[in-house]
Length: 399
Picture 1 (cartoon, rainbow, N blue to C red):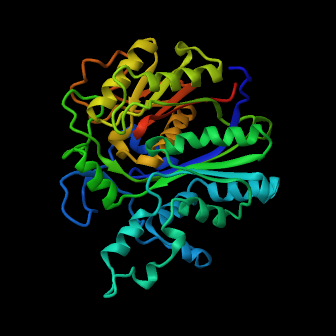
Picture 2 (picture 1 turned 90 degrees about the horizontal axis):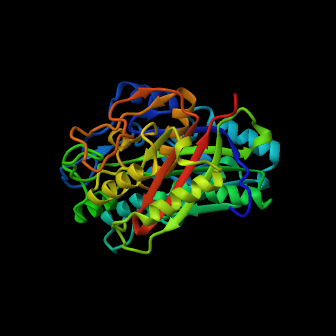
């Protein structure tokens, strides 16, 4: 790279998904190889599939001061902010740097579209959305970031990234640029996506939804299981948190190939991967673990498995965690970044859950069962519809 990459500290981070609320719940499920998927009990009409649903979202309530933002997506965001003391840490950053010096960069693919669906399903006699849902704030792609900015009292740069399934991975890249360019001193990054009919029936119309729990990298895989999640991280310069795990690099690319299918040669994914390693100043053999995009769709898994087989040595471990959580769409990047960071901090390689007969293209790098081993460098891949690719490199603090 022409400009040396300065790593950023990940002072704190959190995740909420079908595995539970907070990092301890996720670690416990990963250790036990226990999936959070369940038979679909969400959609407004029957659909035979499995989903990764977060319990308690319906009963969650936003603080009265933020009631105008109320919808399923923002309720899940509020639940997520309250895990692992993240809310307190974010408010502390605001106190230390000032509200205008903390950026907010959040990813989502559907934002609050579930509330818009509800409005159109309950039109009144005049064909209008019912009064309680006539809230423009929630019928917009920026609903999530607007709510979180208000909830945290942040006044710095505020961005919504919506690049399909790479959305909340790309937020790390945006945040790094904002901090490097002096536009912010810290950044809250993350993403939230919730279940809704649009994604369930939309992906089903594309014949991408599996009728059984998803099986990433299995030769008999039949498609994805859709999930929901919320995750957040607080990024600062290294001198502010020298003992924290760190963002070592990132890579981004755009396939410009097809709206829903990666190029057969995997060039876009490979460009993002190589850019990430280059920024981090690392060679492939220095990577200990890769959290794969691994959606269990036919083409994605085939292309990604071939990329791993030809790029990394046999001692590098790799697995998809979507058999645990489902594909959480715009929240997948932050959720799987959190799991990669957990691999570093707890020495756990998650199993590639759901695969019974590995696809022949998979190399010896795949961890079919969970493993306990030291991890110093971990990657997280996120490859979205339309060819929006992102790869993140995380590392542990030096001993």
